[in-house]
Image (cartoon, rainbow, N blue to C red; front, side):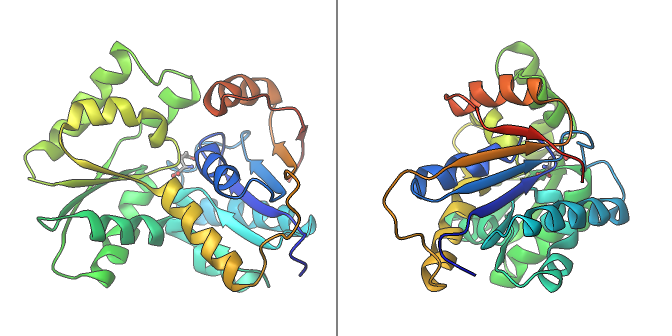
Length: 265
Ligand code: DGL
């Protein structure tokens, strides 16, 4: 695999742009292919078997485009089928759970960490296991916040509705004495300000940032970092109409999304 091949990133939808944003910021010369399975989002409410099947289709699509590394931006997929994806492909595969878990364990002072994510991610206990594998004395409280994903997909990331929903969910974590919270879902970094306001004085771990760092070190070790200093190209693939992806995505990225194509998996 050549170091000039693109990085492949996939998510169930638009939320993985949080990871794309960090990766393109940290490695501006890399070419990136982003696939959002917008026709089938959300994954987080589906069975493990269905999530795995969808994720293999996303994987095969990006592999057919010769990516040099695969970033599974979706927490739900990372929680359910990461090891099967690794068995399936000959390139390094980076998930979002391990980097987030590691950063949370480093950040916590009182060894009490909260993890919020989709129902499937929380049900899988993947963060619980990843955190305990690093430090088994840490206590982990998981909480599913299913309405956060449609809020973000709708572009309602601030204002009264977002705040009320966050207050309702996060009240369940407030009496747990946690000092660190992991945003264990691609979409949640877009609600970071609201979550910060509601949780007050807590360290927030954004898996997107941590995943970008993990990717960079895997590419450096490869060695697979692209040598050219020219700006990288960014191509987006979606499985449903591109319009909503473009309007929410552009607002979030603060730039135009030009090269976008609708595909069938
Ligand atoms: N990408 C998913 C995740 O990070 C959230 C959206 C969904 O449920 O598909 O868990």
